Length: 212
Image 1 (cartoon, rainbow, N blue to C red):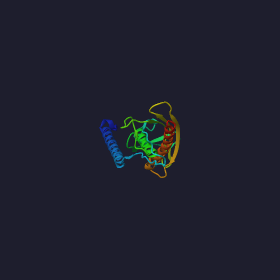
Image 2: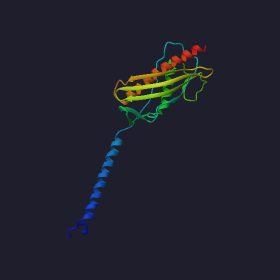
Image 3: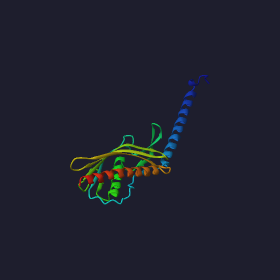
Image 4: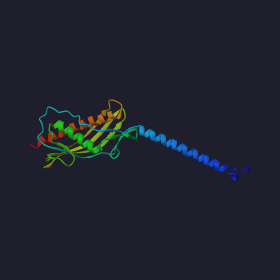
């Protein structure tokens, strides 16, 4: 045989064999990745209205909550957690069950309904009643640290439907998770929004008293 492998076909055989091995290795790797992805199911989380009724008299007015603005960094289906200073992680398999801005609006509306003692509180632009007050929320921070807790910083405005004047404020809340797991973070967010709703309800009652 020739001392030069390219002259007798041995180099070609070796090249074909290497290509087959690489193809097989790639197929095995892709199969392992697919199996890994398939074995981890997605989890979906909601925010809940957890504020409790007070001893104050039930309100006789109606309230609309919205619009709500949130930071672009968290305005996505995936839950976002801070893992280091200036570094966050998107949790691909832990997601919000609905758009986050809508979930916040709906949760605060439920909290205000309990705190004001009236069912005439709704979120969004459409309601089956004429609102006496509108609440707008500008969420500045909606941060979470896994296993630690959440920070929610919100600028809010309460504006009467008629007449002049409005009340505004800023509520900054740090709520511990209380346990490990992303469900604990969702619960902490719900409690933080309940504290925000308490400040907003106080402002609505104060404005209603002023306008009597």
